Length: 599
Image (cartoon, rainbow, N blue to C red):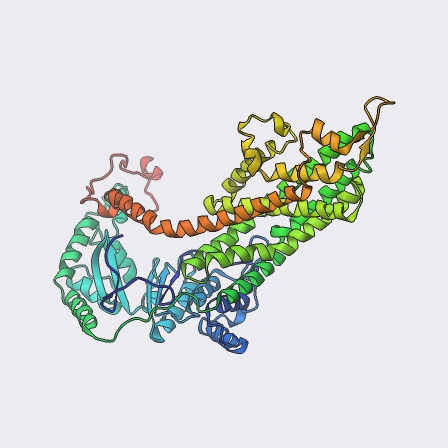
């Protein structure tokens, strides 16, 4: 939680490039293959001066080094497609970080959730990386004896105190010297954990309450009568004055005195900003093409809903009742139809997780990611807008003319883009996709209330709802533009026969409170400005989260330190007295006067 960071005895920050970190969770785009994932990552970080053949050689070399040849062209896998195994996925996570040959590689429980064979292959791959002259530091989850034998050095911590630090093969000897020898047929790592993990105290207390153990005057486990805190305390004291601690301190002092051991620090990525932008755009576009839930499902739904709207309002005409029908149709298209764009939120959440992980290791900047996401989504948004606009425009028969059709499609395009941008802002603040959808839907619902359809804009309460909500609501601008695009220049039948016809200007001004002082293109421009503002807000939030991260981590560290004493490993020696809830147990057969077959 606290302390200094020294690299070769010199105080340093853990810079991008010199240090890489593999998280416990394997976060990758499931639609890409293993080779594609490594290739895109290489283009994002390796120097732009390298040719495609050189990058390909590095990628293929990394695939061979991590033993991923058999699954090189297999997709990683996601919610609708089966992919590579857990062990292969973990090795791919490691391969992504060793592409740039970092000096140090940190891993958070790389074998967690893997079977013994997969765990062995992962650690064997890490051993090969260490043999290349790189330092590999990893926390490990309950290693098997085969996995434990692969480690060079072992660092045992319990309650924040050093129990042992030195060669892994000498740990058994140290425990024996301290009076806690490892049984001949027990896995050394299991023995070490048994000695320093206070959770075993609760298990011991429970077992001592059973009749089976009560019948045995002496336990076969020599530690059954000792509290873990006592064992740990003895080991800590023993190590503090041991030859192993002296060797470690002497080695640290020796390294710190060597001149010329400065660690070269470089930026996380050596690729140019333009190279990062193009690579991210290509990768995101491929992901969107292959992920059924990102856009394809929405395109199908948009087609079906457009046909429904077109047939319900088919050839709406110019009668007096057509006035309200046109208004309702325009409000539904600019409001409720564009609202369906929140359907891609879960897929975007997964992509944002990849960004957070890659940003942690300095793959690329926030600006490149923000812009690439919009560029990769652009073709899909255009497709949705053209399909929706064409079907509804010509079935409903809005005011004819190419300029009116173009405005109609552009209005849909920018409205959908605004909602997607708003959901990106929500995702950056509410990373849970279920809560994110609820939050985003609530915000959009509030904005739709002030669009001018449910209550006319001039009638909205001036404080808050009219100023500023209706002005920052994209739906109010989009709906005003849709009214002007359809009504201005048309005439409609009067309510009573014989009266003069009603002009479109008069209808939207008197009946729907829309001013015609400005052009519909100004309304569309306002929607574009709101779109840009949402993208900028998304960018600012991501940057602010980076800046605030050290401060938040410091607060978290202080809170954690305050609660450490509540954890079992920090408690004082617990009583191993039998629990009152454990009463002497008797088998059913013995209660009936019969001999139990178990005795």
